[in-house]
Amino acid sequence: MGSDGEDDDGLDDLEDLGELWESFAQRWEQEFQRFNEAEEAQLRHLSDEVNKLAVKGAQAYGAAVGKTMEDGDSAARHRSQVAGSVVETEHAHKFQEVSSDGRQCRTGVAVQAMRESDDMVKNIMEASEQKKREREAKRKEEKLKRDSEFAARQKARREADRQQAADEAAREAA
Picture 1: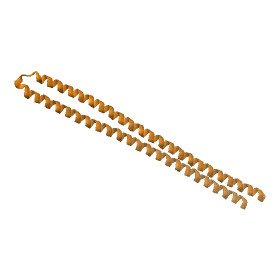
Picture 2: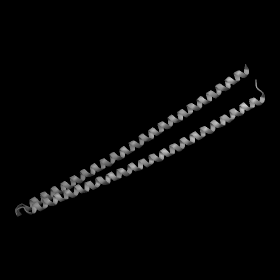
Picture 3: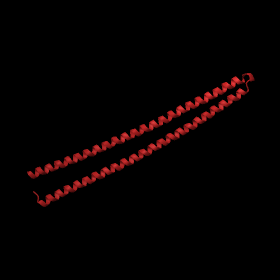
Picture 4: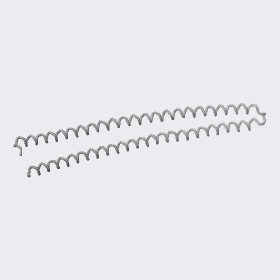
C-alpha cells in the first residue's frame, strides 16, 4: 500500500484527467458546431447559385421563345404579302385566312412556349428543392451518426472509468 500523499496524487491525476477529457469534449463539440455552420453556409451558397442558374436558363428560354415568335410573325407577314397578289375577288377571303392563320400560329406558339417555359422552370425548381432536401437529410444523418459515435465514446469512457475504479477498490480491499 502507498502513503496518503501518493493516493492524493493519484486522485489529483484522475481529476486532472477528467478535466482534460471535459475540455477535449467541449472543444470537439465546438469544432463540430463550426463545421456544421460552415457546411450550412456552403449549402445556402450552392442553393443560391442553382437558383441563379435556373433564372438564367429561364431568361435564355424566353429569348428563344421571342425569336420563335419573331419568326412566326415574319411568316405571317409573308403570307399577308402573298395575299396581296391574289385576284381582287379572292382578296378578302384569302386575307382573312392568312390573318387568322397568323393569329392562330402566334397564339399557338406563345401558348406552347409559355407551357414549356413554366414546365422548365417548375422542373428546375423541383430538382433544386429535391437536391436541397437530400443534402439536408444527408447532413442530418451524418450529424446523428457523429453524435451517436460521440455518445458511445463517452459511454465507453465512463464505463472504463467505473471499471477502473472498481478494480482499484478491489485491489485496495484485497
